[in-house]
Length: 99
Image (cartoon, rainbow, N blue to C red; front, top):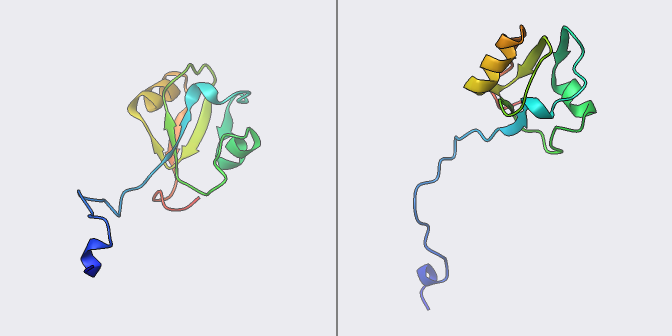
């Protein structure tokens, strides 16, 4: 049998430069100190980070009532709106490839 029949056909287009973010919802972050900083160390203490290092994206599902500074690789529009409505700030860290 020819070698090309031994391998499956590759179909479609694969994006090799796509960044896959690990999602963290605003509502899942608990015990945020007033005027505190929510960064990778804070998320790791709460057990919200994956074991494999991955860029983090904050999503807007849930409620937020505490003013805090959030540090992550990316933010959704709703998360940014909820954080700024509560009086907090959003800081984008790095290019998304490192933690």
